[in-house]
Length: 137
Image 1 (spheres, rainbow, N blue to C red):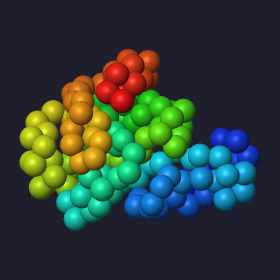
Image 2 (cartoon, rainbow, N blue to C red; image 1 turned 90 degrees about the vertical axis):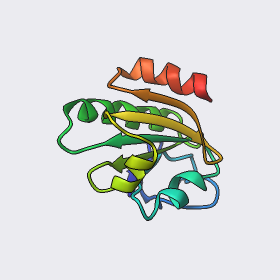
Image 3 (cartoon, one colour; image 1 turned 180 degrees about the vertical axis):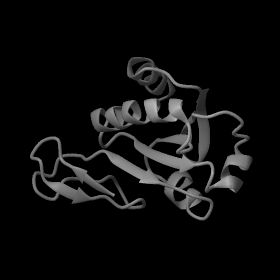
Image 4 (tube, helix red, strand yellow; image 1 turned 180 degrees about the horizontal axis):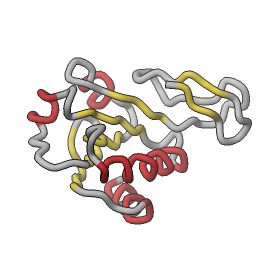
């Protein structure tokens, strides 16, 4: 994924998996960590992450999912270096959705060290999501 640095404007390639957290190649400021995961990559991208992960279970046809997505990306930008946002398309990652009993979307989880520390279903505005994430962390 390519992310533009909020500090200097440089575009940076951010891998789904890395040691540490991503930083801008130009100004070295923390970058928001946005990634996608599927059935084959979930463990590596989410459960093995060294920082807390917000997992967004979504689908392209889901209207509320499209409302939550930008809010989550904004929060990932504001918390660059402190959390990772991973989107999981439930239509493509069927086994992962079944594993976590995703019955309604959007479904959000905060995971740390491979364990679920918070869960929420449904769309919420950015300020509500911010409080939920901060309480979980």
